[in-house]
Length: 70
View: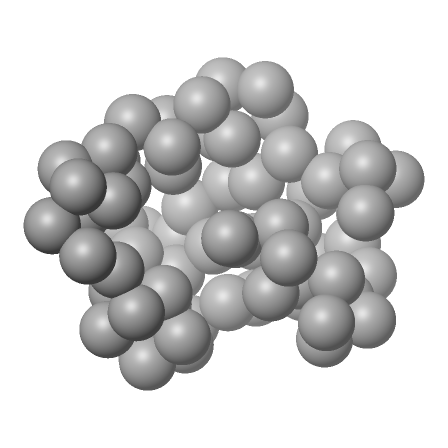
């Protein structure tokens, strides 16, 4: 869901999904089952090097590897 959002935005390296974007486009669309795995999904994307988080812990930054992936 995160990578799909970046793809729809035609994002490039360094593109930021703000906390507001995360809340509006991801969290509000989750059902209870998906909500339970949200943090694990974010951690997987970060550990894979596709995304990084900003200091606020919510805003996501697309890395070069992530841009290549989408």
